[in-house]
Length: 229
Ligand code: 1GP
Image (cartoon, rainbow, N blue to C red; front, side, top):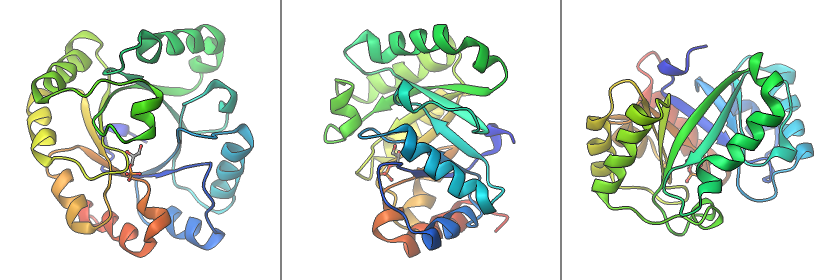
């Protein structure tokens, strides 16, 4: 499992219902991994329920994106820890993360953990409001990308438009800033065409909400960005 080769990820929200049938389709879709993560009402029960249902019958790698410590549990293949770079509050950039490291340093030593530099660009997104973000312009975003790679040496820079389809030009310009840090794009992808458009610049795309609104179209985003399918 090498996150540097990931091209497509589905993100499942533990606070949302998904039938076994739809979950099977997501797991068998050919996606590179499934991220379990959300903003509101993420509980340990919800996280464990999804993990066990995925693990029951599938080999797909499963990532926990940690949004609150109470829902942290061993058993995932990989852990993502967001640092919200455009938050106005330092606690969302690094304090919560520092506290988690202090508490879970032992577990981290035998787990695969990656920190993500998040830049949240949709002011309507719950995550934007929850982490008290400031809306950056394109030059700001590029400077955050520079910091992610050259200051923090983060493996991932995540352009997050959660809930709305973003500006492909922003993604293109950000990609041009990055060499080693991988660019993840997520937000509003509902069709194969949108997946293709964002994947042209992003190293990996993340598809979330459309799993719950139009699974048929959502599944088509996988083949749209993976040549081997
Ligand atoms: C959310 O980036 C992901 O964190 C995916 O966004 O739910 O809008 O697809 P959507």
